[in-house]
Length: 121
Image (cartoon, rainbow, N blue to C red; front, top):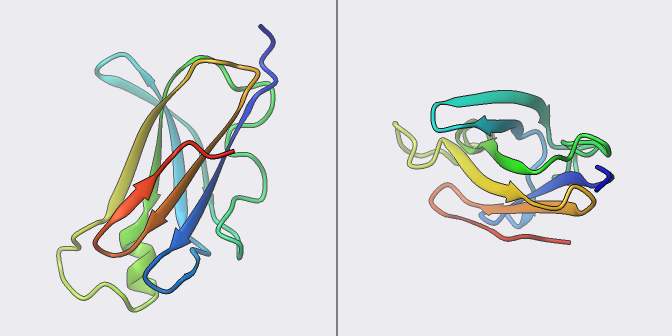
């Protein structure tokens, strides 16, 4: 099967009801129980999305991946991190890619105290 799929994300700040602009996002590929390889790092734009797919067309291969969202730094910059240490700092979302021809979309809805995700479209 040809690797024509790609990976995107979208972060929504549910505490303020806004896209989470400027949040750092890192993509890792997990290589067995002890290893992981950093594939990409970026920041969300004004719409809470990345400007380009975080895993571009042609690089989507079956395996286990992890997106890390720097929510603690984001909420601190927004003045919404009332305690130290932060309740949520780095939010990891581990997921599998099975079909290299599919579009995988991993949205994150987040506040300083809760988060939710799902496989989007």
